[in-house]
Amino acid sequence: MTTFNDTILKAFRGEETDYTPVWYMRQAGRSQKEYRELKKKYSLFEITHQPELCAYVTKLPVDMYNVDAAVLYKDIMSPLPAIGVDVEIQSGIGPVIENPIKSLKDVEKLGTIDPESDVPYVLETIRILTKEQLQVPLIGFSGAPFTIASYMIEGGPSKNYHRTKALMYSDPKAWFALMDKLADMTITYVNAQIQAGAQAIQIFDSWVGALNVADYRTYIKPIMQHIFTELRKNNVPLILFGVGASHLVKEWNDLPVDVIGLDWRLSIREARNLDVTKALQGNLDPAFLLSDWATVEKKVKEIIDEGKQYPSHVFNLGHGVTPEINPDRLKKLTEFIHTYSKQA
Ligand SMILES: O=C(O)CCc1c2[nH]c(c1CC(=O)O)Cc1[nH]c(c(CC(=O)O)c1CCC(=O)O)Cc1[nH]c(c(CC(=O)O)c1CCC(=O)O)Cc1[nH]c(c(CCC(=O)O)c1CC(=O)O)C2
Image (cartoon, rainbow, N blue to C red; front, top):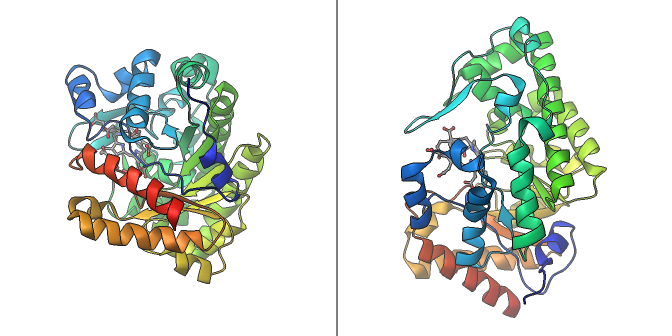
């Protein structure tokens, strides 16, 4: 019987580790053929509503790639039906919301989440994984208010978030009411994941990089401060991640988080030069995984070397695994990260 490997939790907490631990955003599903077979029969929501099946999908990459953590298979949209938002994931489009938020009146109609009755299957999946199946930590997650709000206001994926920003600028009352509702949802939902057994949490603020620093401070930072202050009471590591948000990393560094997740736009060295003091996670551009192996190796060594000069770094991609990435590549990459970082 193998023993529980908590290396990644140490790294999340800023402690030094024997090697650089690694997990990949969107490591579950996507490129795996076992998952694609399942997807012929079931939708994302159908999988996540069946705890045994969802646990299987979550654990698959841990077994296949030997990564140092599992990340729960579900979407950032998963808790929305509980607060009264009709969301559907449409193939080729992404999440689609029929009745977008337009005003304070719409915000006031939103309800609250009661995880034990609204999403019992999420909690059951976590229990199965952490009590029975995993020998590595399970990372739970939630979307952050800006990113979730962008889908709720735009009605689906967006390129420029114009409707979202227009509501934010023109109707602060509606905006802050929406932020408060989503902050409450996030806190309640994440607390329940932790109580069920999740050992670390990533908050995806994937699209907040669309805001400038001044607007981040006015419209978002106080809400994020509140969320992380509440979540911190659980004493599990907290990771904050966003895409195209290099200009915000100094703001993030002020928040009570343990780890900052970088995409590929800012190197680990550059982040340190900006006086970012938190543990860092990242940041191989997923595009490298479609390159020849020598090119991958060179870049990965560079990232590990930069991370090694500071006490803690968790390897990850700069954003999620894309469906066309060959699973063998992820297996080889994980092996290389483990071996090289032990020697470096
Ligand atoms: O697959 C896509 O990314 C396209 C559709 C899309 C989804 N959520 C979405 C998007 C992007 C958008 O349209 O804005 C919207 C979405 N989901 C998510 C994020 C956060 C992020 O990645 O920055 C975002 C926003 C940013 C982004 O698109 O990358 C997070 C997410 N979705 C999902 C997971 C779980 C997982 O992959 O294990 C996770 C998070 C955990 C992790 O990183 O591992 C799962 C998910 N969401 C979704 C799908 C496709 C399901 C289907 O086609 O039936 C799937 C499953 C799959 O990839 O096979 C739908």
